[in-house]
Image (tube, rainbow, N blue to C red; front, side, top):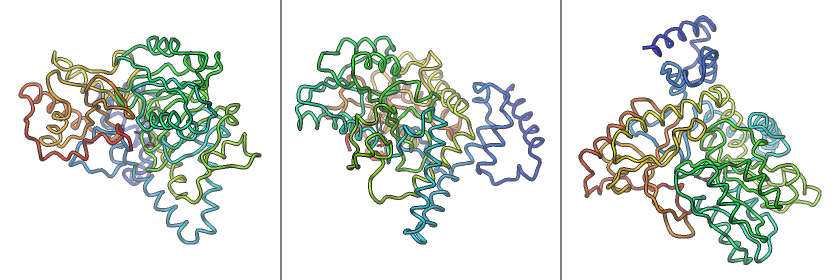
Length: 458
Ligand SMILES: Cc1ncc(COP(=O)(O)O)c(C=O)c1O
């Protein structure tokens, strides 16, 4: 009731603030999102998180297939329409005369670097734009000098591709890789102590996720980075799921390098990522493609990849504008609200277990993992798809080079465009599974959608 009152008040204020002409701006356009945000600016994000009138404006900004309920936003997310339109615009322009326009767009992308750095809290000279987190992280993983016997400490719940990258160096150069196990959910202290205890005189690198792609376990990045620095160890952080998902500033993490997928939570066009490297650490890493010596300390050395689609990179600017139009705090609060809505509804069942720490506000936002005791998670995922057209990822530990972990769960990840009806359908579907079980023969499931592409090696 309260939110309904707020909604009406917000609507009236919104019309008052901008007038009818501006409000008639194209539905789903950036102006509409900005105007809606302006109308709720004086209210705390946790309250706006419940305002369906506001979130309706955000939902309208996307062109989606609503015949499926997408609760796998830990994969690659749809971009808002304005972002996709920007890709087409830049592509059209470059294609007219690539020899002329490609260089112009490339030069203009410096503006995107500057804005990204300002939003995410680092110097523009510390931020390289890449094609994704795999590229960003592999630049630094493969770019650091290590000798046979030197040691990397990482975890069994790190991303398979990143683990494979260290494995390849192990096979090629004889480095040692220690993969730590940890229970989920666990505490920041526990994770800190596991890394601290594993240090040896040969430890040269710490590599871990800011939040994991499995249960969204949050790591104490700043504390681990300080510990590492005090012992001359380099810290590489996998931020694929963190940047654009919840608010923080890169420089506050104090790590040496941080790789991100921008086509996840920032909703950038597919093929965008970034690599933050602390200014004094830039010369410690070789680039992916060779660069002249005078570029040793230049962040741009990490960006050289030959000819590539600049339209994708230029449109990152639009994705950032969309993120800013909602506001990082409001976005994180809404993601947390959606997660708590399904988790609180389901946890009344004694057989339902959530493997993500939802009790503390600064520990979980749009990603959480859940299982039903006694039901195989693959069968459950197929049931959700067959009967309810819901897409979630079954998390099942693999064998090296993939992540090895001893639990099974569904990863559930809504996004800013997810409706309450979609969340409630998921709750109904899980209730159904708890009460009635799931059928054995489910050959109709579209397994490709449930494969958890981002969990396995590729
Ligand atoms: C934790 C983690 N790291 C790295 C990656 C790789 O990201 P990208 O696909 O952008 O290369 C992913 C992708 O899902 C991920 O979840």
